Image 1 (cartoon, rainbow, N blue to C red):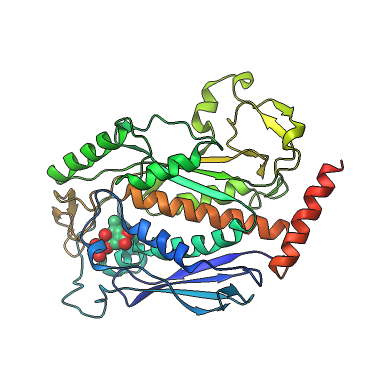
Image 2: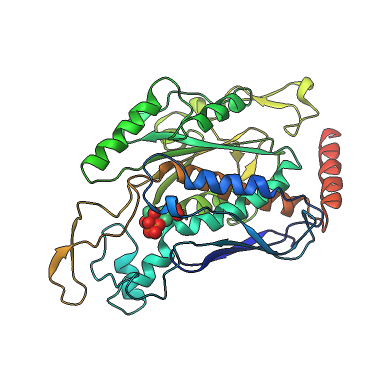
Length: 388
Ligand code: EPS
């Protein structure tokens, strides 16, 4: 089956990060400036640490692209690390005191060592630069089908944005998000409250997590599958989102709140509007979108709505109780340069890993070796559905 896949490689302080993307159709225009902008957004946000002052993440394209277009072969994206010191034993010393919440302890045992260094190098959220690059590349395909993805920070600590996102106002909200240091489009004070929470954690030498939210507009009905558990688009999106470093929960639409309500208040009643018959939703409308655009593992023509919780960063300036893995004697957890909060960056990562899964579902449904063939399959499908 034609599909879209990617792998990443690289350590936080190694020479580079790479992403290898397989399955981009021939002829798809690649917007390198857009991909670099997403990388810059990932580097930004309120509460970031010193690393982002060192790096200027930009993609170098090693394979798979000619004259700004995919040639159909695997695409290799490389992001050099300026803070490249992995082979310098002094500059990347061993870490024997695992940080609670980080991969340190489990990774050290897994690799049969008392040094957490190699675990932390790969587990680090620095790797998300490669995921953003792969996802933003996939978005170049989505743009060809007018599918847009919008992510932002919904909450930090107790500070929550009081906004409703619709297909009509999201571009306006996107401009507000881009003007916000926290990447929160709520001009009504939530942005300031979020910054205040992060500032307080900095003062306390503590860290902050939050909630990211992502909307996808323009998906045709029927992406994903109800026939296999791993073909369900919600299962793929959930897996992609929960795989982001420090993410602990994901929900679609009303999510966990659906469990507390009767069915009559949860399910989105179906109606028809002939005026929107020529759109990817085929004219099927809903007054509500509690399902978050997915029913039976398939897109239902409504925007996808996904929320996810990020725990606070696990490197604390005031370290928690841990031990020395060599002696098993109690000791404070290790400290590495880190962030107070990476929630804004995480919203960019979430946007792009979701985009990758939607692009994969598009390729699986409208398979074609070239963009031209994919467009023909897409149009033929919507025409056939309209003729029912
Ligand atoms: C990050 C790079 C890392 C950390 C952070 C995110 O760089 P360094 O370890 O050199 O400071 O700032 O990583 C973590 C929070 C983590 O837990 O590993 C990045 O580029 O996003």
